[in-house]
Image (cartoon, rainbow over all chains, first blue to last red; front, side, top):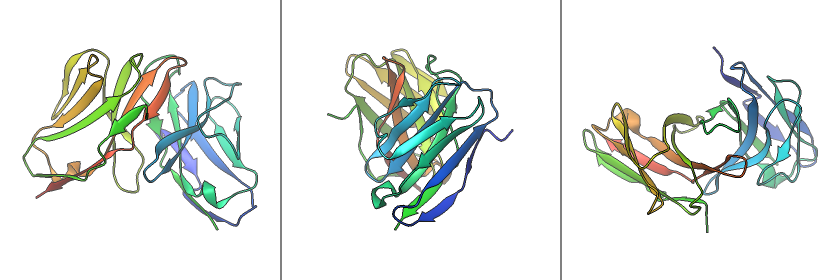
Length: 114
Length: 111
């Protein structure tokens, strides 16, 4: 049982380049999330998808776009990377956003923008 | 004011002692409270959650919730070196069951 799988694990981008972070879960969860984690800032929500076909902005959505491709997959795209987007990105899923259950996190993507 | 506040630590305890981690939250509408453990370079993993006032025990871990004082704590009994990690507190509240995470407390258990 893989849980939540994120790719890639590491990435270095030049300012202005674009990339897509991939996330897939095999737990039949309805809700999926993208967070970034920065020192001293904690985990901050970028975007979430409460269910297949819906996406909504979180706390820090600027500079990002998302796609809920199907129930399993939720991708995060950086159209024009900036050094301020250097961070560790975590995808997470939960059974249902309406239910107060905890998240299952992916292993993370360490992104450096130079 | 931050939604969730934690003392960043580091907190150091000797092996076998009780480690006490604390968290306060600002919104009285918060409904569910979670503790995650995060090893260095790894992703957060859920340890336990609590909804009701009082204590909830799971093995060596006890979560304590006091809604009147707006704090939640995690006690780790018989601390082991493998418990050395950063512990994240998270709360969940309406609208939309939004999650808010604290910045974490770093715990070191000294053999």
